[in-house]
Length: 321
Image (cartoon, rainbow, N blue to C red; front, side):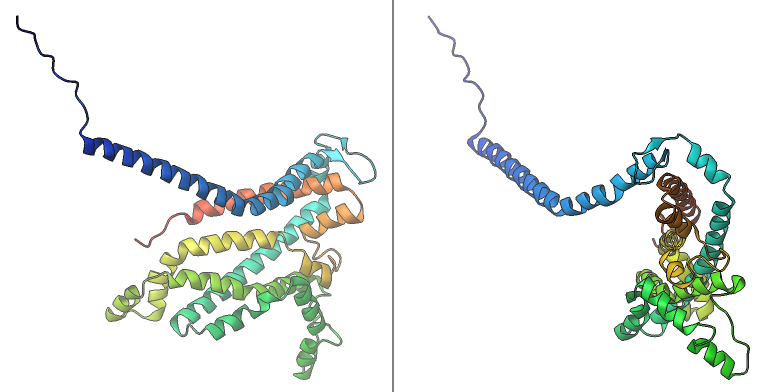
C-alpha cells in the first residue's frame, strides 16, 4: 500500500523573513522619529500659536462681535444689529477720513516704491557693501513716534532748521505740518524717509536671486543698463515687488503714530486718517461699538485690496525658470 506524500507547507526563506522583520522595525523606528519630530515642532510652534490666538484671532472675533453692539466699557455690550454700519455709511467724517487715507497711501506708496527700487538697483549694480546697507536701514531702526517728533522739530515753521534753511536762501517759510495743502504729503514723505531703506533691502534680496549670467549675456549683446532694467530686472523682480507692494499698502492704510505726534489729525481734519478717527471714536468718545464697525470695514477693504493686488500682479508666479 502506497501512502501519498503531501508536499510540505510553503515557507518564506530565512533571509526573506529577516528582511521583512528589518523593514518592519525600520518603519516603527521612523514612525517613532516622526512622532518625536512632531512633538518637538509642536513645542516650538506653541508660543507663536498661543500669541496668534490671544493677540490676533480672539481680538478680531471680539471686534467683529462688538461692531454689532453699543459698548462704552462702563456697561455690558448692547446688541444693536447693523446700526453701527448704517451710521458709518451716513457719516461724512468717516468718508473724509477714508479719502485722506487713500491720498496718503497713493503718495506714500508711489514715492516709496520708486525710491526703494532705485536704491536697491544701485546697491546691486554698483556696490554690495554691508556698511552701505546698514546705513540705508538706519532710519527704519527709529520708531514712528521718534521719527515724527524729530521731523516736527525740523519742519517747525518758526524754529525748525528746515525752515531756517529755506529762509536763509531767501524763500518764504513753508508751514509743512500746519497747512491743509502740505500736511498729508509731508506726513507721507516722513514715513517714506523712515521705511524706504527697509523696502529697498527687501527688493535688494529679490535682485540678488536674479542670475548674474543674464546681465552678462545682455552686456555681450550690447544692452544698456536702462534696457537691462526693463527687460531683465523688472520682469524677474515682479513676484518680490508684488509682495512688497502688498505689505506696504497694508501698512500705509494703518498709519497712525506719525499723525498722532505731528498734527493730531489737523489742521481742520486735513490729516484725520481713518486709524486716527477710529482711535478717537474708541478712546476719545468711548464709542467702542462704532469704532469696531469702522475697523471691520477697514479689514474688509484691506482684504479686498490684497486679493486684487495678488491676482493682478501674479505674486505667486515667477518668470525665473
